[in-house]
Length: 96
Image 1 (cartoon, rainbow, N blue to C red):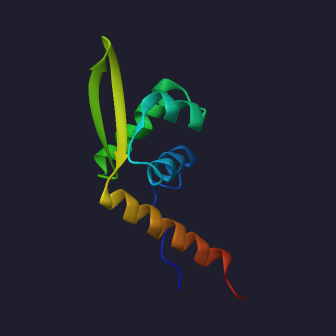
Image 2 (tube, rainbow, N blue to C red):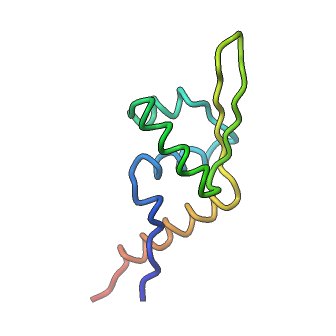
């Protein structure tokens, strides 16, 4: 009857990260930190989990001698986000 929700995307911070990345080509760490209103440490942990699951890719480089981290969503991540949203909508449309 119901398809299960994606366990990774039930977490509000990870859901917000994937939602933002689904709308842009790539995004830097500081913007994600600002938009998710989370700490640097927590954001790093959530990004690592998403990367390990293949939902996002992370590119680290240097700009003016400062580290720069850019993230982008993968095809797998975009599909997972779309499926999660669709499954969630099915819960909302439940007819009793």
